[in-house]
Length: 436
Image 1 (cartoon, one colour):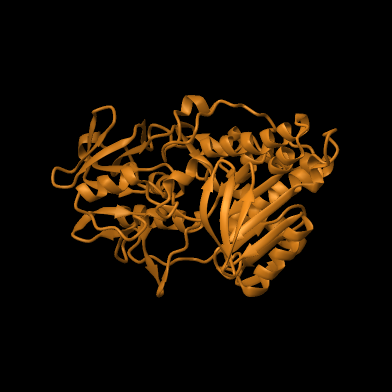
Image 2: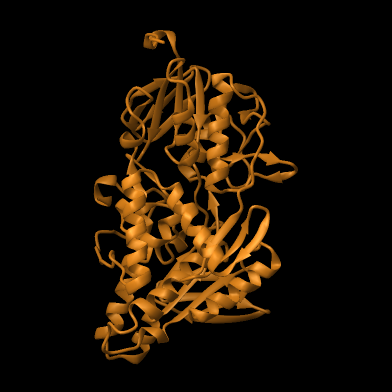
């Protein structure tokens, strides 16, 4: 069947090249739709492995794939541009370049960013892990702290630089704390002369009663044990009161304590970036307390049948519960909306694929196939799931080789301090030219 002229196809603009937006763009019928994908970066980021870039296990090119390699021109037009305006009445979106893109259908899949719960000033001292730029910042700080500990003769300064604090006991915080424990306890154990990296103090702080609260209680308890083997102390029921360049003030059991630490990492929440929330507000769209957009069973925005929201940005309820903020859920939502527009689907059905959190070598916890899994089996399952999720056969093989090398020889190939990053002052990733 020949492809209709572009003027005979409906125009679909997809905002965001993450899991949801990319799934939608790849599934839309290019014979019926003229698809334009807008993203402020030129790559798709495999966020589940971002913490491995932050701890030097993987390189940025292992998890960042150029969008043009994924979407050929005959499938979609890819435009690197930052969204600066939405006019739902005129049916156009505006970008920072001053260009307007008209649409017949609009799919918003911009995702969520950092959430410091009203304490945005903490970000300079406690970077979060949402973007590629953040991974470089965290990697520089973790490795830089160890380098400082090597040359300083001041024992107090050394102790401060050998103390790492991760705030937030969700999957990201657990995996990040475990990766730091494995880095200092195994990989770097014999690489320094002035101190023993195995004596680093690593703390994982969680305000709630337990880590991995969305998992089974036994999985949470198992995660605490596995983290302890990596030298990570889990402190549940701990509130953060303030953070500065010297460390943080915490409260636990009504007692306050000062923790001096050179490296503090925030992994406690997500919200729509303020700039995007402002755009949505100007467009007259209602959002919830973290900036997500409520949608109906078809992922439509109330009062706007041609506007869809998918991925983490969508406040979607499935069987009485929020749709989980996971890559498989985002992909399923993106594909459903595309199939809905294609005319091949009418009802969304979420297929639970489980949740896994890896905690160092041969250790993971979570659920899969409706059952709780743990230990080595869960770890291998985690490896297979993430290898499968990477885009491109060459990338899959490269990451598999890197992981095998790391497993056999305990060697990390991306332990480079770049020092290319300025202090964190805004919620947006830096120019992608600096991410290369």
